Amino acid sequence: MQHLKDLIQRYLKGRATPEETSALEDWYHSFDDSEVPLPLEPGEDPAQLKQRLLSRLLPVMQPETPIKAMPPYRRYAVAATVALLVAAAGAIALWHRYKTLPKKDIAVHMPLREIAPAQKKALLTLADGSTIALDDAANGALSQQGSARVVKNSPGQLSYQADGSAGEVVYNTLSVPRGGQYQVTLPDGSKVWLNSASSLRYPTAFKGTNRKVLLTGQAYFEIAPNATQPFQVQTSDMEVQVLGTRFDVMAYADEPTVNATLLDGKIKVHDKILQPGQQAVWSPTAGQLRISTADVHKIMAWKNGLFVFNNMDLPTILREVARWYDVEIVYHTVPGKELYGGGISRNLNLSAVLHVLEENGNNHFKINGKQVVVLP
Image 1: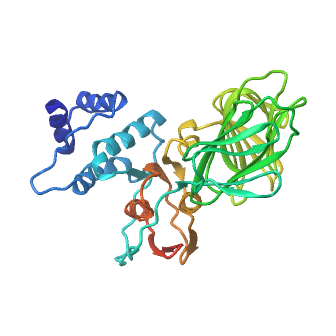
Image 2: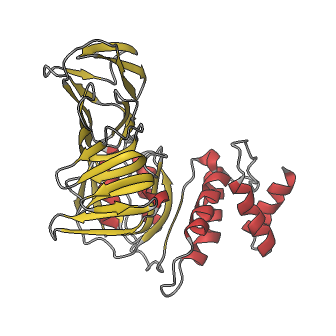
Image 3: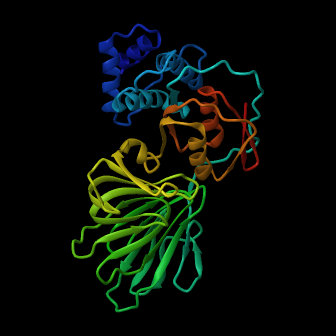
């Protein structure tokens, strides 16, 4: 452990050799969640250590002119290493690819009341139109829906358990509000994770020749294989046809495209068959479908508790922030044109996320109730 502390100190002072820097990244890749004493200077707190680490990294990552993007594994290794080294301070790592212009000296108004990240909450609408607020419901059986029992297994997890009866097929809808997230296990054993501002409508038993669900917003799916009963995800603009697989679908009304990203298995979007690691991007306005290689780490970041940005502009980032924290974004200026990369924990309060965006961009922010005001 002392060797690791000494290595961190040499890195902070700019004395680490390329081999030692590589060793530091190797330590990150083998990180086992054990506590690492922070190499604090006398009188220094963890937040100040975070700033020392970032000040060492940011000049390297902000060249005078645009350069080719670092390979993804290098970007994520460096960002995550910083986050882990200062985990005790709830640290974050973020950078953008272009040199930051001098900032204007503007006072930043921090909120008196913190806005917490998304919680495990959702509303379940039953076949008769009645609703259950799942965040308030006790664990255990909630309702009988057709031939399945609806069970809340734990906070944030719902499941449907077939009881063998010949009940009719009825439909339920799981709605996750802005500032929420939830997981449901469908009657066939398929698992679905719903992101903020999303809903899923599904039958309480899958009968017939297919298994079809309706999605708004974003969800990650792990589908139980059944070659005789293909799985389908329908959005307002896209249909994804599935055989046993893992994939993500993003279909928010305020985003310019609808995206389906395949992790493994096989899916079909319109008439295109996707291979693992590919993404189908549908533009409703242009009426065009494009297949490209996906940044799977970024796509899956929301499920893994992270915001991950890969050459993303501020408005795109703030749309995601707005859904996660259930706030409205109000622009009092034109947002900067810088592109951001790196990662921020989704478990931080909103003010901490905005602080990092401020430190690495050209805009300031003010929290006014449930609004985030974007300032010069």
